[in-house]
Amino acid sequence: MDADTCQKTGIVGLEDLPNDEVFVKLKPDFHNLLQGKIRNFGIEKFERKIGSGRKVGHWLTEEHLIRFDVLLKILDHFDMNYKNNIEFIRGKDGRKIRNPKFPFNFTSCQGVRIVSGILGDGGIPTNKPNPYYTNSDKRLINGFIKDMRFVFGDLEFDTRKIKKNNTLTTVLGFSSLIQKIFLEIGLQKGKKIITNPPIPLFIFNLDDDKKYAFISQFIDDEGSVNKVARHVAITAGTLRSYSYPNILKDMQKLFLSLGIGSSLYKGKYRSSFTGENTIVWRMQINGQFQLKQLHDNLSLRISRKRNSLKSLMKSFKLKVFRRKEYLGIYVDVMRKIQNSNGYFTSLDVSKETGRVVGSCRNTLAKFKEKGIITCIKSPTSGNFHEYGRYVLK
Image (cartoon, rainbow, N blue to C red):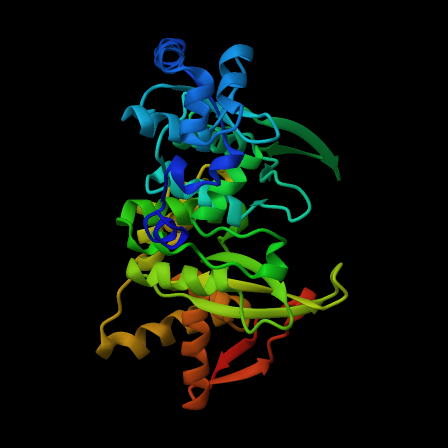
């Protein structure tokens, strides 16, 4: 398959990688079988036949690994294949993948969580060939390792700890060979605020459970659950020069394919290491029924976020107002709160009705336009955000 095909299917075969940069260790029985055939043919004669130089003789006499492109020529000559006959593969950095699972398939729940994790708290550096994933939550780290083994096989990786602000973070580092596989499915090198990466194409064509798995990992990495304002939010940063973050625009498309709407908000400018300002964007999912859909389908690994979403769902009273009862019910709610507090806010109305804050804020704005209520203190934003205060006329 070519790179475009891998990006559309989410499946990478060993042949899709640079064949001269992959080194192979065959299982002993298969190695001995090939060795017997080559020696019967004559090693030097065979090397001339397939045009390999002295690589075959070196491989047989020194018991070194064989380069994959040379192995393919050998197998093609004898009309054989390597299926189930490889003990391990590795790239130039030496880290092995034992009992590799060919082809490498990212269309499972485990596979999409890997892709989402690299787009979230992971990355592919430009200055070295080793992709990484980092997190302070043990469940996420252990889950990512388990997912990687499910897709790749028994792979070697390194682990290091970083302590910052009393938080111990684990960094998982993987081989250069893993990087090449990631690039084949559409992941990109470089810092994400600079590259502004999209979601790989194949994710959009998967079943709903795979899409929810992808979203779950990204919320674990980059999301939050606001129990007060009653929404789920996902953030991503870009350089100021970008119109929007591709990852969040694509995430909106992914949510829409599941019947879930969302809103995208632009944050404030911040300075960055590049010298160019960055913007942190926030995608927000509101509405009790949409949030219930997320609650019922997400598989969050961070218990704090999972429990917050569960608690948020319990806070909804799930009231559905008939159109003819709409105004009367709201007036009763607002009067009750006003009699107790002297005024009411959109947050107060949200808690009493079970509706999200944004919906209640829009409703109060309509009531104000119609002259039903009066604003006695305007809302403020920023670090000292306050909700607007209203009273009935």
